[in-house]
Length: 431
Image (cartoon, one colour):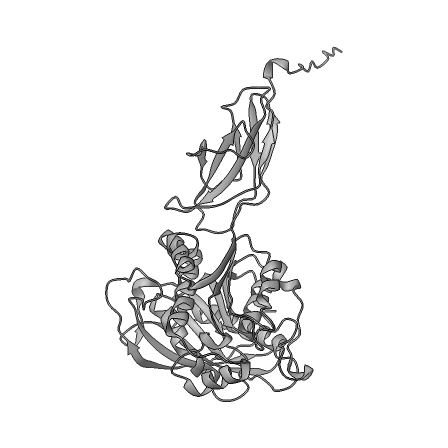
């Protein structure tokens, strides 16, 4: 696939109206980060479908160059919503600048959406072409992005049709370690327009997603196919996934407020609503926190995703719902001699630094603290047990700060007494 994509980039490096941010990293990821942001334009050629993809790349800047202080940077691709007219990138400039200010290189391609036919399939191919370009730019000593991109930490983010394509790319491409879909739509067709403009796809790709997946939902509307993201979330196969729903949110709330023409058209087309800065800030906070946690392993971001801060957003009515799944997988217990042998599937997420094991002789009753703490490993022999007694266990993963994720399903076993072991005698054979 990669060899088939002949990517030609026409680089025109130029400083954006650079955004200077406070030198102290803000606590809340909904606020701007510490980096000045600059922008350059490239054209990427996707040989698999003949598309030329005009792309703006935003990056942390020092003068006219990429700021080396945080390099190599985790790198994101932002897939815009269905915009068949005008300049699609104008509707998301603020979103990508916000991400870049937090120490990300962010590519914002402009896809040529058509008023008829399938827009999703070529979009998926084009997003993957951008990923290949970013890899090649990082390896090219003549590129301004040479050795500035962390190609082991790619993320995808998108809105509407762009959100759906982001999920599909994540399901097809293991390079994607984290994905954010803002009110995604398009898998079974948007509920507006004729069948010819409805994107078609199956949820097959979603079941194969391994990267941590955040789906931010809004109220059901004409443009999100009646909250289609609920079905998407169910089918996402990632070990860690979350679905916060913005209270009173509209499908169009994720657009840049500076693009008033298209944003107002979107509200009119999708069934009403009006811009609310707090809702957009909330979406930015969730997006940055997600990437900070899963691409940068910043355990301080736990509160915005699973802890106190997001619970406060729920209590304050900023979110109407927050569903998530973070439990370890494949947890089993089996009897050993004077021990219980425990095993589980080791998480691929680097943010997980170890596991907490809870043991009890009563099902469902697990007082703190954990009976055992282990590192990044997939098994443990619990020898602090008495033979003949049934022991129950649950397992929780934890990050570097000790924040615990959801408990595994319960497992149990009765350890054997080594004194009861039947000796095995080998016959003595003489010639």
